[in-house]
Length: 391
Image (cartoon, rainbow, N blue to C red; front, side):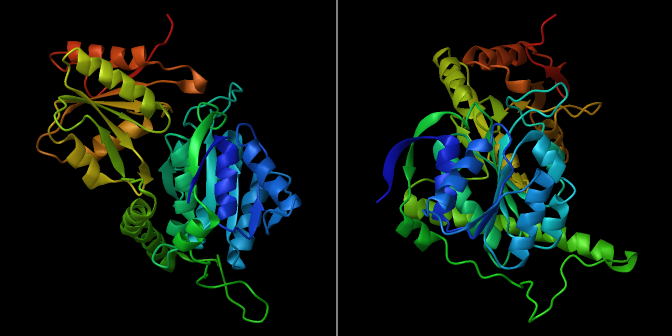
């Protein structure tokens, strides 16, 4: 039976990954992810985890190592953040093109410059189009659950794609929260041994990541796109099974007091729970406010987004990253694109907030609602604003 314990979130994630019986971890330490690397390394050194912990000299080497290990048939894991994820960028599309079910934690952190070690989503947003399945955790329990689910999703024979789990740096990674940690027996029941589609071995040579001329490259890219789109069915099945086994349900888009809401706000990651308090405060004032949380970033849940906002008048989309010179934040752009062809859609507002770890409070979320509700002519819709910028 699951045991309820208090753990730092990064330590809890490392413990969850160990329960998945990984064969290999290649992790280069970088704040605020380092505790995942440290704890996995300690468990291997202490004989608590029967795996290889590969000491690498950079994040580029870390991703290279897990690609090689996964290609050889190992259940492989890594973790990173910020500049480390950017250093991996060259290899991320290779991992997905080779259909390697690598799992990775991203302890989301602002990208330099200037140098900043605190949280926003500017590291993961540039990786949107690398072919990885991408999930966002809101709290410690979700970080643990999604880390285990990631292996089940990635290794499904109908998926065979890498998965990243996003965990807000410091605002989540370094918090000590209560978590129900599944037992080894429960995880073994949920996650079968990894059976690779093909492996690199001298006795049975195969080619992985070969050169492709123009006459095949487009078809390969289309196959990759179809694979990640089709993975959604497996993701939903895995989440349904998890709910049956552990009593905690997950959906691509989750809601809070949204059924009759006339104004909705959309969040990703750890800000969702703060936003919930704002919704409660606004409801007490008679405002029909609601919240939707985007759990599944890739593949993008078009149908669920459309269903979630179909009856609302105004939609506030929040972003923790900047698309410099673009039409707004990256999530805002995705939501507008998803709703573009709808005959009726809400007026959409975009606030870019919490960059570089700046605190966002319940008062800030209430302020966003108040500003949007005051725009009775929707004159500020379809535009973006940096929230809380000092004059």
